[in-house]
Image 1 (cartoon, rainbow, N blue to C red):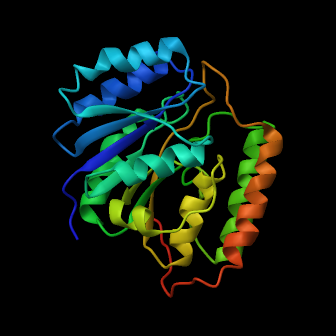
Image 2 (cartoon, rainbow, N blue to C red; image 1 turned 180 degrees about the vertical axis):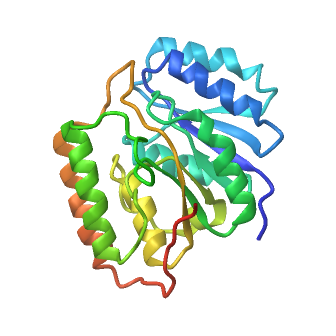
Length: 245
């Protein structure tokens, strides 16, 4: 297969300035890798965020479309958008200010070079990328990466950062099970188990500066269940993931 363009999926809830920055960066690559944009809104999406999305529709010249989420949960938002994607690849871009929009062209370029694989941004592939050292979330993230790497025999460094680009056919064919934020984890683990090539590119991460996360800390126990469930799955591949750079 080859890379012919990416559908960029942007789930939104309560973002404003960070959403504008994400849209502006995506627009820079419109027609040069980015083919279309799907903005996923839900019943929690605030009025200001709705208005910002509407204001950008004309700027995207008909390539931005809004999708009202039918089922609750981030996982369902992404799963519904994956099925709507019409490009050869689909990229998830978060507009909460935590993911660095400057990584978008890097993900696109590596997808061109490795169209059959998954290109995933990593906060831990280089020192200093994770900009909140010492907090509990960082500790839990580090622990999750280490445990997952050991469980799957992988040398990847970041399994829980959902900033990635996938072959569209791959994500449309896999039978996903997670509906919450844990889908971000599942959408790395199941391809890994199938032997899909996964490449990492370094990307900065910082704590969101506006809005509030809709995922409570206690919800991370769902990640533990996802790890156990996927690792015990009978569906296994013979390939091994590797990282780039």
